[in-house]
Length: 295
Image (tube, rainbow, N blue to C red; front, side, top):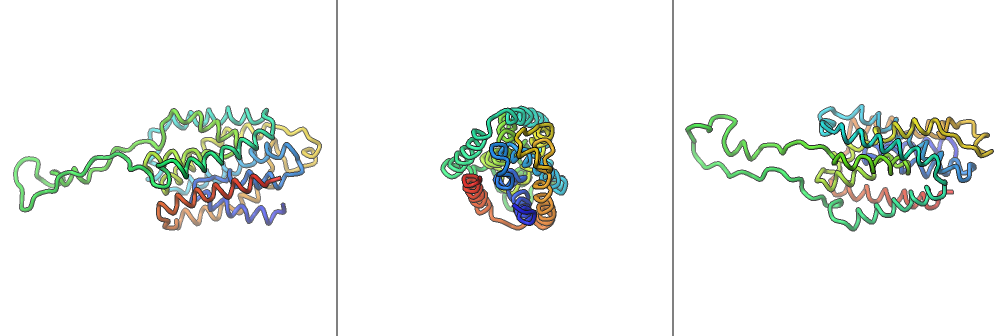
């Protein structure tokens, strides 16, 4: 696959990062498997490692240009972030020693199960409402006097009160999400977005928060991947490899992705919530088909 083709696919990873929270994993893994088909069985391991680097940069950039008031939803999420990172380090070490064939089939199997779950189980295409305070009684007509009826008080204030803030995910999910995401090279968004959606978050918030969570997952995975090696003769001739990372493929994908992320974060399109959810599901189907036919 030539540089211009990788650059064009990088544009797609920019769109998926900004609109769906995919830092590039579900796009990058099939693409790098194609680009590095000459590596034979090692192509999948190189694809997972290269995907991790692409996602670190994409997710990090997307997080940096996200408004601070949006990222405030992660406040108090330190235990979740720590467990995500720990799980990711374990998953990245595991993939270094796992046979390439089973990793590829695990990638496909996980995608297929996720698609079936999102399509058939309630809570994703039409999320459950988040629990919050019920509406208060309507204030009666006419002026009211007496204690507790001054400005900023009374039933109207109760009705407009905001629900207490809470983290995007339970911390206990961090370890398995990090491990599975790093092992398969998917970054975490395909696990975190559905979970946040079922917790009642709208797609726009779930996909935006997926980027900082993906960054936490992919940093340790990338560090492990850069220290890995591929022993095949084809790999020795592949001059762009640093550890398990194909720098040429990663560079082309990032060159295409970063300007798109900046543009879409600056001018985000208005997508109806349900359309956004269906588009997320459709993208997973496309990526599954691409990986199934990858060499």
